Length: 459
Image 1 (tube, rainbow, N blue to C red):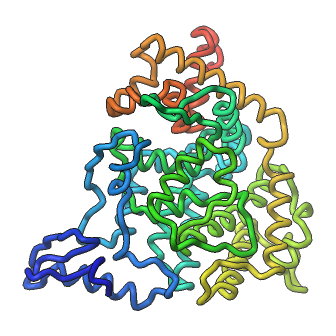
Image 2 (image 1 turned 180 degrees about the horizontal axis):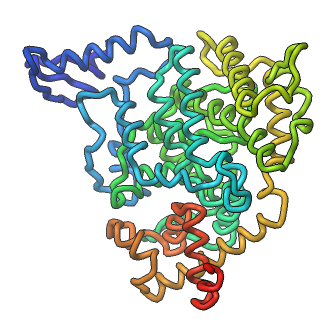
């Protein structure tokens, strides 16, 4: 084991991890430093040579302190250093217990629950849960760091705005249509030209949560989450082990200031590749059955490649004989097993050609038939209400309307540096992105419909 990363100190109750000495107590005659050492060693005995070991984990605040674009340059918060638990388990716990994670249950996936009410249609929270289980299965079978994958998948969508794909397009248009400086610091020349929900996830967790102190998550967790992208779909995914935390922060910055930065991001770990494919697998099986449940498609519309290669009906079966959940399970299991067979012991994550082509065909089918927000008038309506509420909150900031929810539920909890250095337009975007679908609509009604009209609608 590399002594620069881990070492037992001369005192039996001390352990050094990444050049930091941690003192642990003795409980019932057992030094807890020995227990932590045992956990690191047991993990590394089972890890692939291409896996990322937990002992190498470093937290993002170690690098944000010196980053010129950071909201709070003097950030010194030390949360996330619990000495009794493996580092990525801490990250997963912090993600699960955060308020932004809780809001995922009120955000649309491919199909908006506001436009198409149904109690079994996926939302962001069910998607994240499914992706985490899929990622866990892949990482376990491939001898990778399971909790790195789980932690990254738990956080990967917290930056998703309301209204799913249509909402993200609306916020991209906002960024493109308004001249928004990256910050208001003297000499700042960079402008916000794009909106990317993976970058916004990074921003929320590293710079906005906890009064702009962030959650101080591990660099590799944030990197894996930042590098997921549904549009970045290939037969083989590779990683760049030479990617540094400084390169990660530059990529995060470029995601807002250089159009196209997030089109094909490469993670620094093989676990980050697992995050990419787990995110894709989680909707390939679920979106079609959601579409069937709300009547957008029928079973007969499912592509032939999906039936033959992913669902794998035998000669005695008919699609009508399978429950919708069984269809989802078969598609998911087929892809998972194929990836394990193709990727075991390799420095990449790969699908076989037939599975890749079937998944590609199914993705195209989903985008064309099961994402109504992308194809009909609702996309324009969502853009209109996002623009309207954006202008309302911008006026509230300029008029110092302290009764507005942008103050009472957002700005009043932020650090003075954020309020001083962030452009009002960017503050409004940060506030709007954090809303659930239902809360966004409620705020829109409250601010645009006269009181009498709202009472009439309520009746």
